[in-house]
Amino acid sequence: MAEAGPQREGAPGTGGVRAADEAALYRAARRRARQDVQRKERVDVRYGVDEKQAILAEARRLGLAGAHLVGAIVMAHLNDDLALPAERTANDDLIDEYAALRTELSRIGTNANQIAHRLNADGDAHPVDSAVLAEARQLVAVVKQTITAVDAAADAAATIHRAA
Image 1 (cartoon, rainbow, N blue to C red):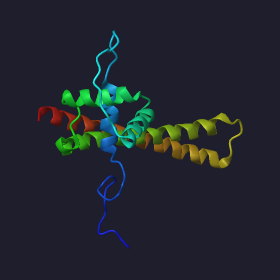
Image 2 (image 1 turned 45 degrees about the vertical axis):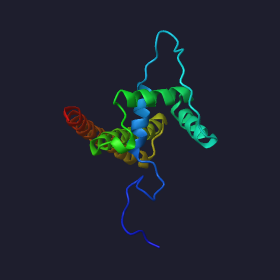
Image 3 (image 1 turned 120 degrees about the horizontal axis):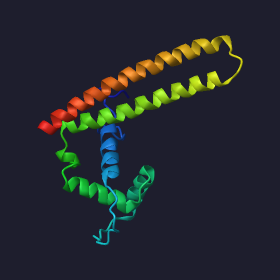
């Protein structure tokens, strides 16, 4: 049966994770700086087995300890750097979508550079190699232009967000 209409990634019923949510979590988790002295104060929290497994899986995916992830998210929220989902604005989502888009574009550029490097590494070039190299160069140029445009749009959105 066909869907009633197009749905964006992460919309209700799709089961996906929105790039904005992913970028916001990553940004908050990475922002918490180390201190010169060891943190000794504790806050005990109880989770269900499934909740704990989900927290630890996300922390592993981000390369963090579970306690660091939970602490970073709580402190980001307390410092008004990370709004709860109900408190997020469309501009928050826009900024995070730009961040996720930039990451994806960078990966495309990296892949094109790897292709070009591989083709340039061989001593004898095949006739098709020069055509592929030309396409890879063109792709890298387009990706660079697009990244510049995304960075400018993200900067504008962040400036508007700070002024609000």
